[in-house]
Length: 490
Ligand code: CA
Image (cartoon, rainbow, N blue to C red; front, side):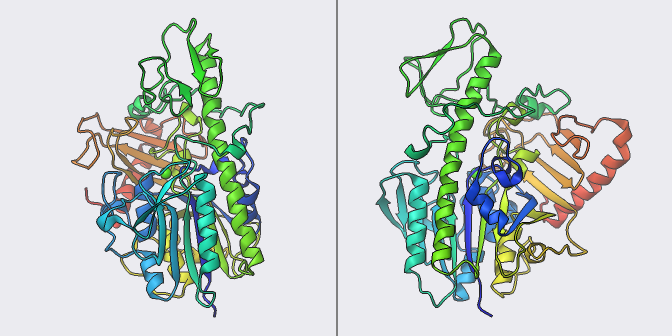
């Protein structure tokens, strides 16, 4: 049988609830929905560490960060290790990665296992980005999402049509600071985006970790994030902390001649949300258009039937949910990855599956489709039966999560936890444990338990409720079983 081609398109920080096939109430994504309509939506796809580099390394290796070496943003990826692109390349696949790599650019951290790689250094730029093409710096002109798509299409056109291919098309967008293309710059300008229902969360009934996190819409953006003119003598990287007295407090949008003045915190917070979310959604609109270009190319080139097309994101994001932006926490908005897949030969059009899938599973899935053996040390399992609409009897019913970077960014405390279909147990263990990129400050350890059926928005921590005492014990036993199974002994 002819081996399938693979196109894996991954955005950076695109939350599932900003995709219409996941029921978004704030935007429409017709081209991403097209993959869903012609393929499958995974309802419960989760990352095992909700942050860029660790998720990317987990995807490439099929292993947790403590085994692949990338637990944090400060670790460097050892490109000598086993990855699925290397295995596919050795098996005769033409392999390429275009766009965001974010696992280091020099020495052993350059992409390995790719015939062609053309990646952004670090976070890369939204406009006129420099990229590293097979080791050589090249300056491009234009908007990054368009350029990544142009380069991907060019590689597809120039490939050897006799051999199967695997393309990783990794967008930088919609990562902070959310700079839209000119084409989408005025989208949503005469409309307001609805507020999420937990927008005014006051973090009562939650951990100190949630209360202390510095990712609040009302005060933790900086002037670059919101494209504002900083007052004289203030750096554009400074957080915009609203003053106690809002009388006469104003902010000046970079594109406007007039400052905006606020009369209440509520007004200010909602204004900041609109400013943020509109740019975020404009960035996604550009991705959506560009994914449409790839799908059209596959149609024109007669490749749609035999190509597995996936769209996902390295993790989720808070879109004003709980009054936040950013990710890191094991809470649903951040934990959940969007994941749509099309492969007409095996996947029923318009199907959805609620089995628990992990970013660890992607590597095994690709090897399975390529007819290759899945190495024993990969920690994920192939999603192929799930894509076929089956649910194997021994499919996982719980998953393990760990965020290592104690207090480093946005003051989010390190934690590990487990999720079942109904419950989530999180432990903030309160120590840096010598982890790279962490702040060595001890916190009182704390736990959270959520009943996702009764409380899908995770607004009420049930951990201290005596009614749940036995359940907590049961879930802790499972948490430590999962931790051991993941070979995480720290
Ligand atoms: Ca990310």
